[in-house]
Image 1 (spheres, rainbow, N blue to C red):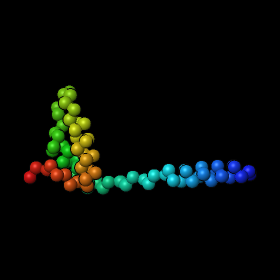
Image 2 (image 1 turned 90 degrees about the vertical axis):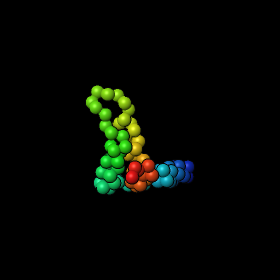
Image 3 (image 1 turned 60 degrees about the horizontal axis):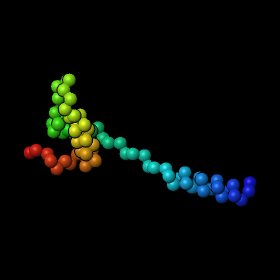
Image 4 (image 1 turned 45 degrees about the horizontal axis):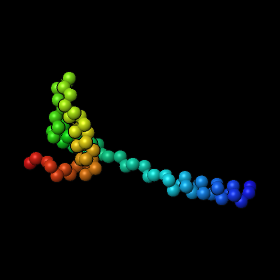
Amino acid sequence: MTEKVKIFATLFALTAFLSMQAPAEAITVELAKKCRAMALKEHPTPRVGTKTGEHKAQTAYFRSCVAKDGKMDDQKK
């Protein structure tokens, strides 16, 4: 192998290694259930056939809840 090929192979391997991301950590079943229940309480599912966009609000609330580890500030007491 020539010197240029060795350098290219080394740089390619280093770039591939450094660009690898750590796998995402899975959420627990308990957290998913808690956040789903909170999302449904905050944004109830509308009747079938109505187009209110609540599913987007539920999804956004759920993702926010998971990101905050289930500690939502806007919980009604």
